Length: 193
Image (cartoon, rainbow, N blue to C red; front, side, top):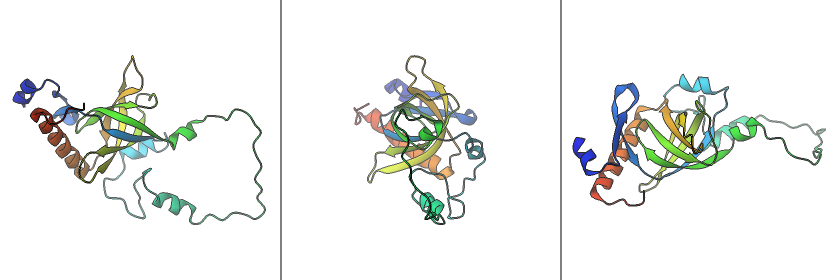
Protein backbone atom coordinates (compact mmCIF):
# COMPACT_ATOMS: atom_id res chain seq x y z
CA UNK A 1 0.00 0.00 0.00
CA UNK A 2 2.99 2.30 0.34
CA UNK A 3 3.40 2.15 -3.45
CA UNK A 4 -0.24 3.21 -3.90
CA UNK A 5 0.35 6.33 -1.80
CA UNK A 6 3.42 7.24 -3.85
CA UNK A 7 1.53 6.84 -7.11
CA UNK A 8 -1.55 8.80 -6.12
CA UNK A 9 -1.59 11.08 -3.07
CA UNK A 10 -5.42 11.21 -3.19
CA UNK A 11 -5.53 7.70 -1.68
CA UNK A 12 -4.73 8.35 1.93
CA UNK A 13 -4.64 5.95 4.87
CA UNK A 14 -6.36 6.53 8.16
CA UNK A 15 -6.91 4.58 11.35
CA UNK A 16 -10.14 2.62 10.89
CA UNK A 17 -12.41 0.94 13.41
CA UNK A 18 -10.86 -1.60 15.77
CA UNK A 19 -7.36 -0.34 14.99
CA UNK A 20 -7.38 -1.60 11.39
CA UNK A 21 -5.70 0.45 8.73
CA UNK A 22 -8.17 1.50 6.08
CA UNK A 23 -8.14 3.55 2.90
CA UNK A 24 -10.54 6.21 1.70
CA UNK A 25 -11.06 6.76 -1.98
CA UNK A 26 -12.40 10.00 -3.42
CA UNK A 27 -15.66 9.36 -5.25
CA UNK A 28 -18.88 11.21 -5.91
CA UNK A 29 -21.81 8.85 -5.56
CA UNK A 30 -25.47 9.64 -4.89
CA UNK A 31 -26.64 8.84 -1.35
CA UNK A 32 -30.18 8.86 -0.02
CA UNK A 33 -30.39 9.23 3.73
CA UNK A 34 -33.04 9.40 6.43
CA UNK A 35 -32.68 10.63 10.02
CA UNK A 36 -33.46 7.98 12.59
CA UNK A 37 -35.65 9.05 15.52
CA UNK A 38 -34.02 9.08 18.96
CA UNK A 39 -36.38 6.37 20.24
CA UNK A 40 -35.06 3.80 17.77
CA UNK A 41 -31.42 4.88 17.79
CA UNK A 42 -30.30 2.91 20.90
CA UNK A 43 -32.04 -0.21 19.57
CA UNK A 44 -30.08 0.11 16.34
CA UNK A 45 -26.78 -0.53 18.08
CA UNK A 46 -28.05 -3.77 19.60
CA UNK A 47 -30.03 -4.83 16.53
CA UNK A 48 -29.46 -8.27 15.16
CA UNK A 49 -27.29 -8.67 12.10
CA UNK A 50 -29.43 -11.48 10.75
CA UNK A 51 -31.33 -10.95 7.51
CA UNK A 52 -34.78 -9.41 7.89
CA UNK A 53 -37.82 -11.68 8.05
CA UNK A 54 -41.55 -11.02 8.09
CA UNK A 55 -41.64 -11.26 11.88
CA UNK A 56 -38.46 -9.21 12.36
CA UNK A 57 -38.12 -6.73 9.47
CA UNK A 58 -35.04 -4.51 9.19
CA UNK A 59 -36.11 -0.84 9.33
CA UNK A 60 -35.84 0.62 5.85
CA UNK A 61 -37.24 3.52 3.92
CA UNK A 62 -36.93 1.51 0.70
CA UNK A 63 -39.29 -1.22 1.86
CA UNK A 64 -43.04 -1.11 1.25
CA UNK A 65 -43.69 -4.25 3.32
CA UNK A 66 -43.56 -2.21 6.53
CA UNK A 67 -46.35 0.13 5.41
CA UNK A 68 -48.53 -2.75 4.23
CA UNK A 69 -47.99 -4.49 7.58
CA UNK A 70 -48.80 -1.36 9.61
CA UNK A 71 -52.04 -0.58 7.77
CA UNK A 72 -53.32 -4.14 7.27
CA UNK A 73 -55.48 -4.13 10.45
CA UNK A 74 -56.52 -0.47 10.28
CA UNK A 75 -60.29 0.12 10.28
CA UNK A 76 -61.76 3.61 10.07
CA UNK A 77 -65.02 4.57 11.70
CA UNK A 78 -67.86 5.79 9.47
CA UNK A 79 -68.48 8.62 11.95
CA UNK A 80 -65.09 10.30 11.40
CA UNK A 81 -65.18 13.64 9.63
CA UNK A 82 -62.24 15.51 8.16
CA UNK A 83 -61.92 19.16 9.12
CA UNK A 84 -59.54 21.48 7.30
CA UNK A 85 -56.92 23.15 9.44
CA UNK A 86 -56.98 26.87 9.91
CA UNK A 87 -54.82 28.72 7.39
CA UNK A 88 -51.46 29.77 8.69
CA UNK A 89 -47.86 28.72 8.93
CA UNK A 90 -47.54 24.94 9.37
CA UNK A 91 -45.54 23.79 12.36
CA UNK A 92 -42.24 22.14 11.50
CA UNK A 93 -41.64 19.38 13.96
CA UNK A 94 -38.83 16.85 14.18
CA UNK A 95 -41.31 14.13 13.23
CA UNK A 96 -41.66 15.61 9.76
CA UNK A 97 -37.91 15.38 9.10
CA UNK A 98 -37.53 11.90 10.59
CA UNK A 99 -39.51 10.30 7.79
CA UNK A 100 -38.23 12.51 4.98
CA UNK A 101 -35.57 11.14 2.65
CA UNK A 102 -32.75 13.53 1.77
CA UNK A 103 -30.32 13.40 -1.15
CA UNK A 104 -26.59 13.80 -0.69
CA UNK A 105 -23.30 12.96 -2.36
CA UNK A 106 -20.23 11.13 -1.11
CA UNK A 107 -16.96 13.02 -1.23
CA UNK A 108 -14.91 10.00 -0.20
CA UNK A 109 -15.72 6.46 0.83
CA UNK A 110 -14.07 3.71 2.86
CA UNK A 111 -15.12 0.43 4.42
CA UNK A 112 -15.61 2.15 7.79
CA UNK A 113 -17.40 5.34 6.74
CA UNK A 114 -17.83 8.16 4.29
CA UNK A 115 -17.71 11.92 3.94
CA UNK A 116 -21.13 13.21 2.92
CA UNK A 117 -22.24 16.49 1.42
CA UNK A 118 -25.97 16.62 2.11
CA UNK A 119 -29.04 18.77 1.67
CA UNK A 120 -29.28 19.59 5.37
CA UNK A 121 -27.00 20.20 8.32
CA UNK A 122 -26.70 17.25 10.68
CA UNK A 123 -25.73 17.34 14.36
CA UNK A 124 -22.96 15.14 15.75
CA UNK A 125 -24.10 11.69 16.95
CA UNK A 126 -27.18 11.79 14.70
CA UNK A 127 -27.90 8.29 13.40
CA UNK A 128 -28.94 7.77 9.81
CA UNK A 129 -30.11 5.12 7.43
CA UNK A 130 -28.14 5.41 4.17
CA UNK A 131 -28.71 4.03 0.69
CA UNK A 132 -25.55 4.42 -1.43
CA UNK A 133 -25.90 3.92 -5.19
CA UNK A 134 -22.78 1.99 -6.23
CA UNK A 135 -21.96 2.05 -9.95
CA UNK A 136 -21.95 -1.48 -11.29
CA UNK A 137 -23.88 -3.43 -13.87
CA UNK A 138 -26.69 -3.45 -12.86
CA UNK A 139 -26.57 -0.53 -10.42
CA UNK A 140 -26.63 -1.71 -6.80
CA UNK A 141 -27.97 0.01 -3.71
CA UNK A 142 -25.94 -0.52 -0.54
CA UNK A 143 -28.14 0.05 2.53
CA UNK A 144 -26.12 0.89 5.65
CA UNK A 145 -26.72 2.54 9.03
CA UNK A 146 -24.33 5.27 10.15
CA UNK A 147 -23.64 7.89 12.80
CA UNK A 148 -22.38 11.45 12.27
CA UNK A 149 -18.97 11.72 13.98
CA UNK A 150 -17.93 15.21 12.85
CA UNK A 151 -19.33 18.25 11.07
CA UNK A 152 -17.27 20.67 8.98
CA UNK A 153 -17.03 24.02 10.78
CA UNK A 154 -17.07 26.09 7.58
CA UNK A 155 -19.92 24.22 5.85
CA UNK A 156 -22.21 22.31 8.20
CA UNK A 157 -23.72 20.31 5.31
CA UNK A 158 -20.43 18.38 5.02
CA UNK A 159 -20.22 15.62 7.63
CA UNK A 160 -18.18 12.52 8.44
CA UNK A 161 -20.22 9.36 8.93
CA UNK A 162 -19.03 6.12 10.53
CA UNK A 163 -20.92 2.98 9.58
CA UNK A 164 -22.53 1.03 12.43
CA UNK A 165 -24.11 -2.40 12.68
CA UNK A 166 -22.79 -3.63 9.31
CA UNK A 167 -23.25 -7.23 8.33
CA UNK A 168 -20.25 -9.20 7.11
CA UNK A 169 -21.75 -9.38 3.62
CA UNK A 170 -22.25 -5.59 3.51
CA UNK A 171 -18.65 -5.02 4.66
CA UNK A 172 -17.25 -7.42 2.05
CA UNK A 173 -19.34 -5.86 -0.71
CA UNK A 174 -18.20 -2.36 0.23
CA UNK A 175 -14.58 -3.52 0.51
CA UNK A 176 -14.67 -4.99 -3.00
CA UNK A 177 -16.11 -1.73 -4.38
CA UNK A 178 -13.48 0.44 -2.61
CA UNK A 179 -10.72 -1.86 -3.87
CA UNK A 180 -12.10 -1.74 -7.44
CA UNK A 181 -12.45 2.06 -7.34
CA UNK A 182 -8.92 2.51 -5.96
CA UNK A 183 -7.56 0.29 -8.71
CA UNK A 184 -9.36 2.25 -11.43
CA UNK A 185 -8.05 5.54 -9.99
CA UNK A 186 -4.48 4.27 -10.08
CA UNK A 187 -4.92 3.11 -13.68
CA UNK A 188 -6.24 6.53 -14.66
CA UNK A 189 -9.62 5.25 -15.80
CA UNK A 190 -11.72 7.42 -13.46
CA UNK A 191 -11.57 11.18 -13.88
CA UNK A 192 -14.90 12.50 -12.57
CA UNK A 193 -13.89 13.03 -8.93
